Image 1 (tube, rainbow, N blue to C red):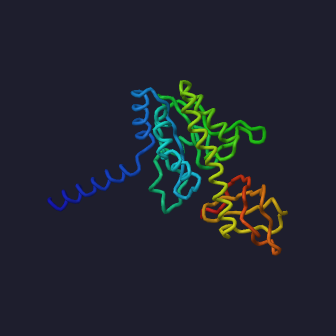
Image 2: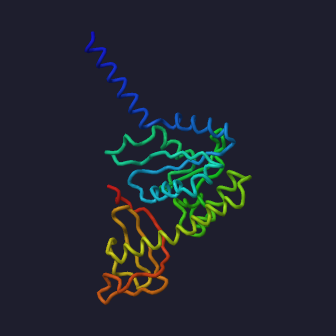
Image 3: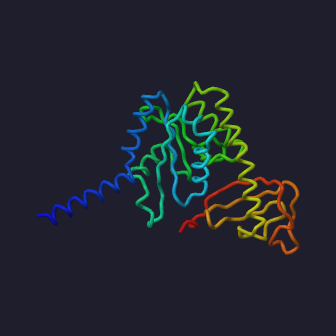
Amino acid sequence: MKPVALFLAAFSLITLTASAETPSVDQVLAQAEAKAVAEHKAIFVHFGASWCGWCKRLDAFLDRPKIKPVFEKYFVPVKLVVQEHERNKDLENPGADALLKKLGGPSGLPYSAFLDAQGVLIVNSKRPSNLVEGGENIGFPVQPNEVDWFVEMMRKAAPKMSDDDLKTIEAALRSAIASVGNDVAGRVFNGDFEWNPQVPDFNLRTHDKQNGFRFCCQVVTGTKLAPNRQQLAQPPISLGFCQEVIPGSRD
């Protein structure tokens, strides 16, 4: 009987450990809702995956020492994992895909939404758009109009949020635009991208195989192509860019 008892004890421990590592959506939201009710806050749910570079940028932004205390003064952050590769399926929160659809997704990652303390949707990250029916997911906001929408999301979710706190987060996001742009510019110059030489100068369409995103880089100043059109003659000073997932690039 002892070996059987030991086996059952070990199995129970493994089960509890797995549950602790990948709690279900119901478990996660129950804790978040209890905290939100007790502290009179809204809930910020963001969906991501281990392969998603922009999700990691959002995580890092929310963890910034100057952002975290300001943001969490009004919101209870909840991160849920979805859309993982087969080898990382154990990272997914059970039920997260269903919640993602309920909140308006999937529409690219990261995807986010603000909920009230009872878990009811207030607003999601789909920015109203004349080009995309149902709105366009802002992901990690790096374009000015995406930052505008994220600020509007916070206003809707926390009407009593002070102007100073809103401006703190907004200013940090707008500075992040330059940071991301500089990162892309540096990686373009260092050859981290594959080139499509068929596009004209000053509209360089590239893709980043590592993170699975395509960048539409439009050089603003200080850059020109080398004669062979396969590399830049000098580092970009500034550029504009967009992002989109490359189908199949995460395989």
